Structures are given as C-alpha cells and as structure tokens.
Length: 397
Ligand SMILES: *Cc1c(COP(=O)(O)O)cnc(C)c1O
Image (cartoon, rainbow, N blue to C red; front, top):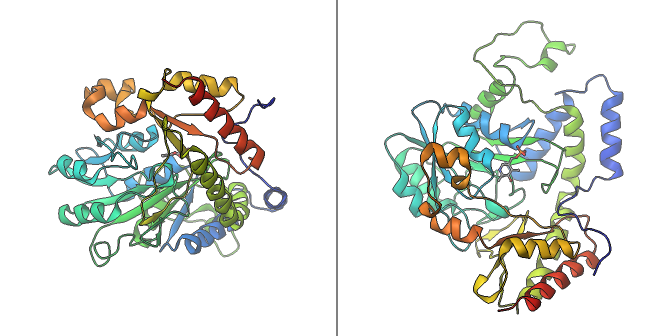
C-alpha cells in the first residue's frame, strides 16, 4: 500500500504559467485587459467558436449566457438532475423555473426522450451537461430545439476538447445537418476551476454566436456599454452608458495569464488523460464487480472524470464504504454528482422524490470517481488499480 495520500484532483501549474502571471503583475493592467482579450481569441481558435467571452467562473458563463438569451420569470429551462448544483442555480437566479429530467443509462447524459416529454409552452431552452466530458446526444437535442424554437446552452465545464461527430464542443453549429441552417441559438459554457482539464484557479468561458456573446459581455460588466480597458487606454473615452442591470463577473488578466499558458499545454494534457483512462479500463476489464465508463463511437470524450460504477450485487459493501476503503489505502475519490433533486432546496421547493428520476437515482448510488489528473505518475495509476482490485476481491459477494 502507498504511504502518502493520492489527492483526487490537484492542479498542474508550470513555470510558464508562473512567468506569465508575474509578467501581468509587472504590467500596468491586472484586471480585464489585453491578456483576457488574447485568451478569448486563442480559445476561439482552439475550439473553433464564432466568438468567446472570458468570465470569472463557469457558473457565471452560464448565468450571463442565460441573461443574454433573455431568460426570466415565467420561463422554463430543461436540464439534467445529474449535474453540479450551479447548472440549476443560474436558472433560479434569473427567476425562471428549472425543469429536471432523467439521464441515459450508458453515458449518464440528459435523455432527449425525457426532454421531449418535459417541453411545455413555457419552455425556452435546454441546458445539456456533457457529463465527465462525454458529449450529449446533440443531434437529437438540436432536432427538439429546432422543432420547438428553443435555445441550447451547453454546460461544457467537463468537455474542453471533447468532440461530437468530429466537431469540437464549443464550436457552432455543433450538430451536423439539424444545427446548420436552423435558427437554433446556441451557447457553450466552460469552467476553468482548479480541478478542471484547464485551470485559471477560477474562471470560465462562454462561446457562441457573436451577437449573443456581445450581449453576454455587457451582462458580465455592470451592463455598461464600454469596458474599463476601452475607457482607460490611450484610445479610450471616459463616456459609457448603463443599458441593463448587469452582473460583475469579468475575468482578470492574472487569470487569463494562467489560461494562455495552460491552453498551449492542453493537447498534451489530454493525451496523458487518455493514457491513464486506457490503463484503467484495461485493468478493470475483467472485474465483474465494476462497470467502466462508456465512450460512444461518434464522440471523443474530454475525460474530465473517470467514474466507475459498482455492481452492488457482486459486493458485500456499498458505495460509501468503497470510498472509505479507498481512503484507507491512501487513495482520494469522489462522487459526481449527488442528483439535484435530492438536495433539500430543490427537493422541497419542487416536491421531488428520489425515484422521480430513476436512472439518475439508481446510478448515483453506485458511482465512484477515481483520481484522473496530470500530477499522477504511472506508479500512482498502478496504486489506484491495485487498491480498487484489492477492495473488490476482499469484499466480493
Ligand atoms: C465545475 C462545474 C461547474 C461550475 O464551474 P465553476 O467554474 O466552478 O463555476 C458547472 N457545471 C459542472 C458540471 C461543473 O463540473
């Protein structure tokens, strides 16, 4: 057994990121300025997006995205129960109603058939979450959006550099055939939180149609018609107008400095993630007490999270005990996610019962996320495998 604790997801920050941050600190501009603009441009090129807006978190990217789409009281937005709470919070923040639906058993992504059943005359849009980095069934979702005149705001927090039918998540139109030429308004929100595939400590990016991005930019900075860099730089003017009651969630140049250097490394980061995933999947292939994550043929996952599922009928312990046993072997693990409809706020406000979303509820009880990060050595990966196999052997039913 290893003698030091293996953290679940520490960040990998190199000397290049540190030098870029120091360069910013030595400059005359530390908040949103030239580096934030350059990070946006390079991100646009990386994912093939029409336009991008850098903000202070993935949550804020979703918030200003929904605001730009005009979501407000009386509106309904459909999303999945198996996500991080903030996907749903942003809908509440704007006074709209989140409508949760169940997930597909293989990917645990939002189920388009359930989305279709949840559509009402008040439905304005769909927020698919590319869970663990595996893209949702976008052709089916675009077909529904087109038919019912809905927007699509992707929670792409896990999905940076994932592809769907050869198209990078965040580019648009994402969906071949139906996405093209239809009037579906689409945005994607990325997170650069410390654990994500690319990090700026805290940060986020919204990509999509340039008109919507322009509107979201205004929402992200007090509703002002002109940002501070444009006001204070030599070609700027002191004059601005407030055209709506905006939020304050712009990205600083210090964060963007981290992002610029991380973006250069992202392809090699992703290669390493895939290497670890291949090793895990190969090692667990013969364990009948485990189900390894699926990757549908038409996608390439960004592999943000490697979530195994326990076949509980083959084990004498439950998921909580399994994670305790990992911890006792110095391996950090987690669960993504506790379904939204089980959290007291949403459960009580909307009267949800656990089995309202039976797939999400059932799968939640057997999910375990294993360490998958860029700080892991090959020996660390083997330690995780050894611990998992030791536990399933010891507690086999
Ligand atoms: C991390 C995460 C977010 C929120 O991103 P922040 O940058 O922390 O605001 C939203 N949705 C999902 C699925 C996430 O994992």
